[in-house]
Length: 396
Length: 86
Image (tube, rainbow over all chains, first blue to last red):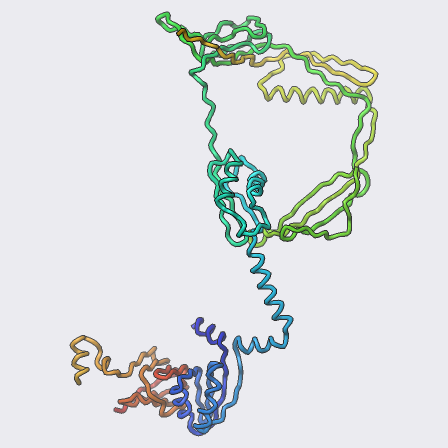
């Protein structure tokens, strides 16, 4: 029924009224002429009905022959609506232009989405795709999809599989990241464990190989700690890839020097704000502010518009330019010392990440004409084991 | 008669092969008539249709022809009786 209504609206229809003695004659004549009528109502000598726009012109002679007078009551449908629009050429031109622009814009890719990345950033994938010619604003016909897929996969070694699908104005890059092989101890390469630096042994964890030092021993740099030679129960020996951890007490000296005169860059004055509208890959300035000369720092922010979950090729860029001024300040001795201690604490935190524990520390503070130097003499507990490859010569 | 015999043999409705009219009724509110020739009488209380070999008359209240094509029509309204004149 809806389809019928749409068809009738599309072709246009005329609602008319026929008045005469024998409306049945007119109805029969219309039926014989292959014209179609609907909503036929008859009250005495008055007949009202609707006919297709194209059929109506053929009804007049039939009505005359049947002795009826026809009068149009209402016209409806697309043909009459379009006739009405003929008086408004601007509206028609606007509609035509709208569809032309839509058609033209649909020839380009306006949004590139990345799915399946976890270790790789979206920007890295987009950069690889851009190198292969896929970026917002590219003509769809100019994109060679197999080439983009192969090229982007080759440029991203972390990717094992990558596919590009274009749907409408959007390109979807779907990828699968490669699962890297875990580190395997190369069993066929014999090696010793030697001391990376001098110290006193605190703990030995020999996983593979034979420990040649014991807890409490003092070792020097390069001394053998765990030997690759392992003896079996029969007295025979074999070469292994020695593995283990050797914790030793090691002396370290950490130093930080802070000059009294400090030059700091500080923002000065009100920031200059520039706004730009990015539309289909083109930027349009929104306000009259220009890019300032040197000595300004810029903070940029880009906001992409989203409509019903789909990102649009419309960006709003906000730039905030603020003048930077170098200010020289003079620190007091206490301030310089605190700053140096702060720097040393940062160094200790870095060492902690490398499995180094500070057992004991002594602080020395020295003041010079220009600054303050703080030194920490530390006794640390750290793993001093270092693999040393063993060259084996096989007799001919 | 021959056609009726063939229809019976094929287990088809009688008059199906002879080109008899077909009526499809939806309760007493609407009837679709196929195989009509012309309309003999049309007003709100009676619609009389020439079906070739017979005349069908629909009686009721508020009757009107919803749709008309060269060989079929749809009558709607409150149909109280149908008469056939052969």
